[in-house]
Length: 221
Length: 221
DNA sequence: ACCTGAACACCGTTCAAGT
DNA sequence: ACCTGAACACCGTTCAAGT
Image 1 (tube, rainbow over the protein chains, first blue to last red):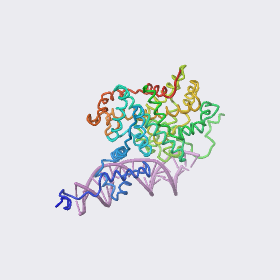
Image 2 (image 1 turned 90 degrees about the vertical axis):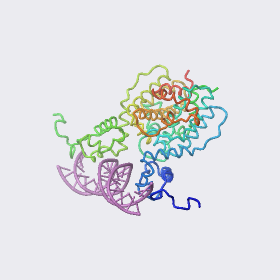
Image 3 (image 1 turned 180 degrees about the vertical axis):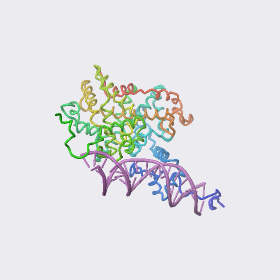
Image 4 (image 1 turned 135 degrees about the vertical axis):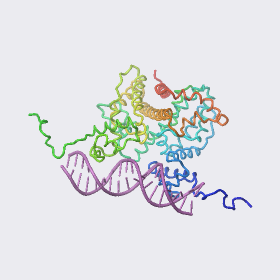
């Protein structure tokens, strides 16, 4: 007789909640309502338990965020790689970028201390291999990885700010200051480019910008 | 008889608090205790008034943060500029970067929607002028400004994460994952660079990295 | 072993009242 | 006009108790 027709032999109550269930609920909440709406109380309500039940499965709120971050990283589709190393690197980073763009809340979590679980390592491994294939030394490969990560996270952050602005969120911002205010007497050069600003930011030029960055770091053939 | 020997003729109580006083207290708190410690209640305690007195001078907490951000931006020392446009741009951005590095909390505030007051515009104006002097078109100048801002904010964010790690803050992170975990069987390329990682991140290579980025964006002579 | 309910020590902010 | 005190509607988290 198969074991699972019996009640499990381990002692105590059977778990009604699982960590996966909690992570899934948190992911859904973040996606639909944003990071401000992610409270332990909201998560517990969404899985139909008391707030404290969550703490059986997750250390604290920060831990939960790391779990969610790793969860979405694990679901980034792994792209088929082109032949040239430079094109490989761009494709790999673009996949990461696209995923983090979808989850607008993620960059805010990363900003509070760039937490990342092991799921992203598959991508990092391929990026470093591509660098090596292009003839970069280990030090150069490490530097490239580091610099591009910095650029990527900054891009996400600024792009999110732009989206928020487009949706009409109020308040001053770097962006607003740059293309609304510029007093032509005090800031003639800024006033001159302010009309181009909109079109620069309207579309996301991550791929092209990343290409320029890579070209500055190394000569790829 | 000079007017100010009399009690002011405007009606009602004399203000005991000023906006400047509040912004100064908030700046000090942020610098010494970090962004988590900045509460309206803490600010009010530090200026010796009730929490609600603050709201007479500041709309809300977000507004206060923008004011502080602009305050520190206004105190960035304006550098003497070298002759070459490329060197000018690097010097200007480095001044901004250095200031924001000192105020580690700032990047977290920027991350929540890159707020910036008008005080930064002096720098932006000079950066765009330098781009134009180097022969860049208006569109190219705008793009360069945009891309470098993205890179700068990302650099600040990652560098802060590194500092936090060095100070022994717990929890997983992108950084930790990259130079502690890498399983040599599954991630051989990562394992190979992990020893270089420490030295790459130990010192801040913002200037050099920015140089590479500029070179990728444009040919400067 | 897992879950609950009440409670603690906080927040930002509103409101009515004092001077 | 400026400030205060009490209160509201929230947080994350601890603790003691239930099953």
